[in-house]
Image 1 (cartoon, one colour):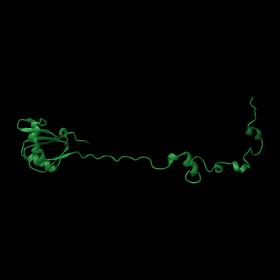
Image 2 (cartoon, rainbow, N blue to C red):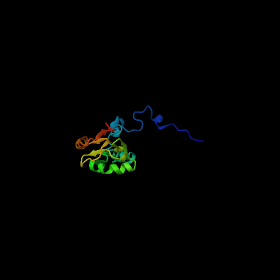
Image 3 (cartoon, one colour):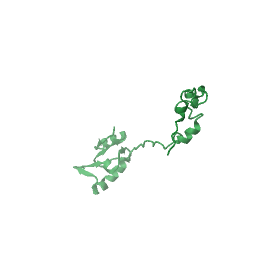
Image 4 (cartoon, one colour):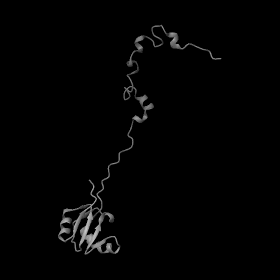
Length: 149
């Protein structure tokens, strides 16, 4: 059988200081070094390190945003490739001009280096200003498609 004992606080009730020494030793938050998490980098540092280790140190990193410029092609390369692409059926021919869809071939930009000898309608996301001038000067068309933004 268990011996029933009165709790200590019940025994001490009615006396001036129930088990805390003098009254001034058991007052407010000052007796425990502040409220809550105060002092966790000062006088309560060891408690903080022991019980809250995740509060310290760096964790992981944030990936930098990737910048995708996309593949570019020069007019001279495009002009050289047109016949082969037509044979491979990757380029369509309408009347006398080739219809080239560059995004489907993996290119996003057209740059203006070289001459244009074939008639063509070029579709791309971006054209340099020189490429546009050269295409229009050769009687070709530059069509901007699927532009983000």
